[in-house]
Length: 268
Image 1: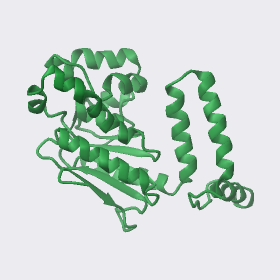
Image 2: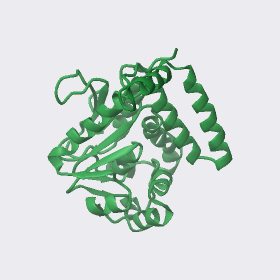
Image 3: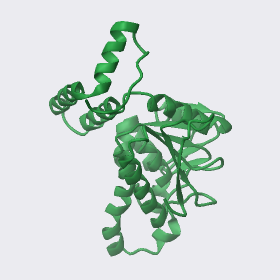
């Protein structure tokens, strides 16, 4: 999508599953999230959301580091008035990825700190290298997380654990991140990206509209009360009866048992 973010599409060959796109950060040495990179992430999310051939997405920073945070030098030069104008733009650039209707997996090596951790939090699942470090160290700069950390982190790991990480700014190793629910899988660093691709490939073969509905129901329900969530679930459940995948899935179940359907991802 630009110089700092590249989108790679799987071609169906070994190690490049069809239907899976990779959003690759490429701002060495630490993939610091400056304004340009943030806007390229927004553009990448818009393009992926509009591309029906993409069924699942992997966010990857490379073999050495995911993203070590925002660009502190850029922040240091901004006034209060400037940040009052720019704070929403920063948050919404990452929210564009969180709002993708497709399964998203963050493949994390090295560091996922500050804005890098917030970027990983936009994903539905996080695969961590066994030597990766996680954290929200903004408090050490005299500020707080400003791209979703105070909201997505407590929803994921609970308010007390989130306050521990945000109040102290301490780093968390992969084992602790797994124990508190911050990450979903821990593997050797060399296996992070292949593991994330394999996870994404499974989703890419699934019923795209049902997966989108499931994500919308879960995420939407977390943002409201139970009654509203149940109403949303009922609406989305009913809407899937207008899809070809529902007909395929039920016919396949009746004829061949579960797990053998080949889905198309289109409405009837």
